[in-house]
Length: 192
Image 1 (spheres, rainbow, N blue to C red):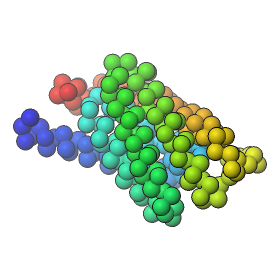
Image 2: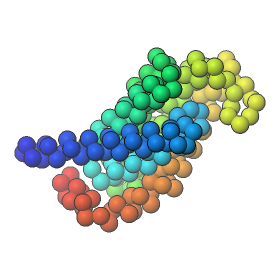
Image 3: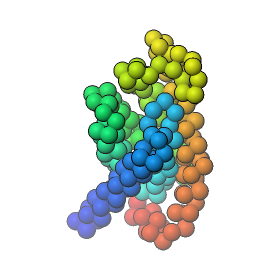
Image 4: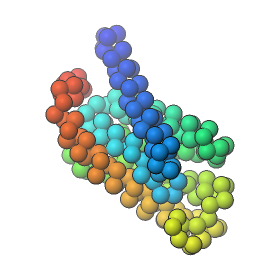
């Protein structure tokens, strides 16, 4: 691989990371935190479709997730509890993007990877963060989940999985269709 190719890949990874982080932070600032919490519609996850076109999206999305989650720790004041999201949430994005890349020949199936990765991983640590922040009820209800990790995990699995599926299939698939017609995407696919 030439130094120009390495530089191009590094720049692509950086641009994808910046786009993901910016979209996550915008969601946090303008959509009342729908990018974090027990019910999530992280609009930036639609960018996972970039992994259908380039392997560079895998580290780019993961890095963008790290940046966004660190910014959330600072803005929300969640402290050490927020580090769960920085580490494990970013791992979920990394794993989901990797599955998307591996299954890229079947986009509808490929996008199921991030849905499952986020539903399984985020749900495992979300109850710990929420309990630490004093959150014990299912949003929009008065149903308390205090001290019931299995129910909190199940609720998180369903809520996170559904939110991720909505974002990926309602926003991500049309984005992938539009991008697949772009000339720069065709060039990236040829480089892969």
